[in-house]
Image 1: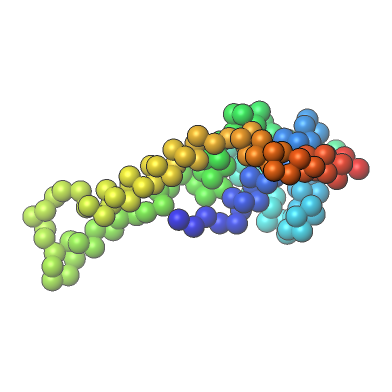
Image 2: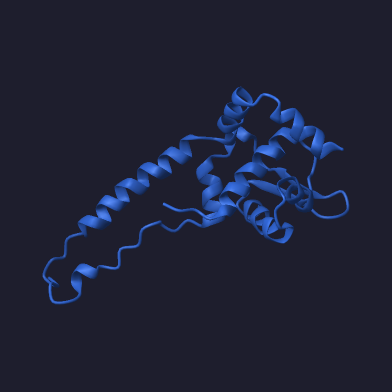
Length: 155
């Protein structure tokens, strides 16, 4: 399964906003932290805001904040906000075309079933992990990151 780079950017921004706390951070500032194109990152942040994961405040002191606590934002929430709710696999019923077609078989495609089971497991795993879980891993493996992020975004 391949996700767009916007998912990675969005999860990192959620982590940063969680560490910054209640301070609004402009999209341009978040983009600068990762050397990303601000206009494209802003689209990802707007998608997170539309999904209710971030709030957006306009104006010179505006920017983005988490709309929920990190414990209430799952990785699946972020993926769905950026990639959309569509299934990763789309069965087009090619088994019903060509010389091997069996138009009398009305059962569900076995390939579609197998892919559906795998996708459900993937979605459940992402739904079971929160931004807070990722924060805890980062803090355990790189304890200086939260302070470094707070310093960069508050100066």
